[in-house]
Image 1 (cartoon, rainbow, N blue to C red):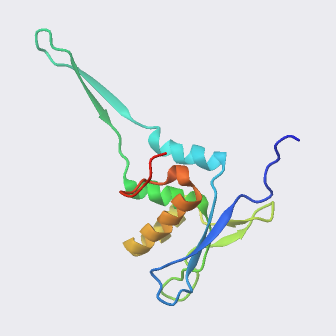
Image 2 (image 1 turned 180 degrees about the horizontal axis):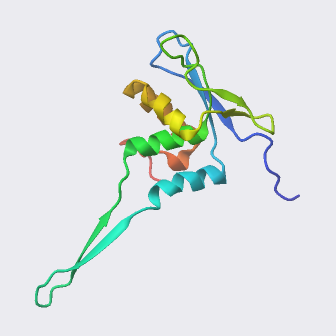
Image 3 (image 1 turned 180 degrees about the vertical axis):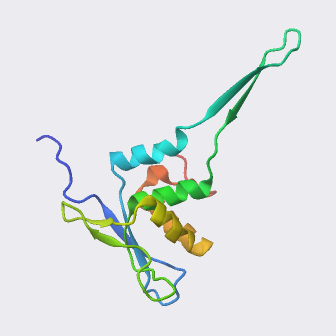
Length: 151
C-alpha cells in the first residue's frame, strides 16, 4: 500500500509549569515539510567577504556574517507549530487567535508580524517554556541540552 498523508499531523497539548493553577496550556503540531522550508529561510541569508591579507605568501581573510538570534529562531518555530493556547492578555482575552482551515484543522490565524508582537509580550520564561514544547514534538528542531544523549 502506498504512503498516505495523515489526516491530522501529530499534535500534543502541554500544561505550562509557569501557571501554578495548571489551567494554562498550549498545543503544538508536528511541522510539515513546508514548515521546515519556512524555518530554513532563517538560515539562508548570509554574506561572505573575502579580503587579500596583503602578506607575502599570505592567503585571504574570509569573513562570514549572518544576522540571526536564538530568540528569532524560537519565535519562528513556535509560529509554525502553535495550534492552540489559552494564554490570556491583560484583559482576560485570548492572546493568540485560532480557527479552522479548509481541512477543518485548527490553525493559528495571526499573521507572522502580529504573532511576533503578541509573542514578544510574553514573559521570557513563558516564551522559553512554550518553545521547549516545540522541540518535544519536532525533535529535529530541538537544541540539545547538557544531558542530551548522543544519537
